[in-house]
Image (tube, rainbow, N blue to C red):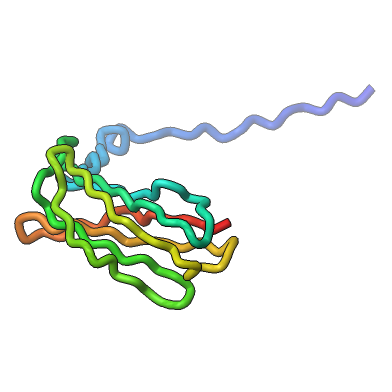
Length: 130
């Protein structure tokens, strides 16, 4: 019978200088915000709420001014309200859909806060009319 011998593999050596290198930790921005809708699959003619929260070092930011812009297939709609955030950093906008977005077509909403001369853009909220 024939025996196949295994060939030795190369040895990999990691140098001490490489092991001593460190990667800096990413910094967390002091202000963070997120936005979402009260219903992400509403009827095309219903009214939904757009909610957002602003935090600074994980605590809610009170008194920041928020604005929201809904992006429909037919064009953008700036929500009329300019709302100040409550103690928890929360705001809520009312958005009547009025059939402006076709069923099954996702729409997005941008929310931003202004606090102390700084503008903070939230993650986009979205919904898809059913």
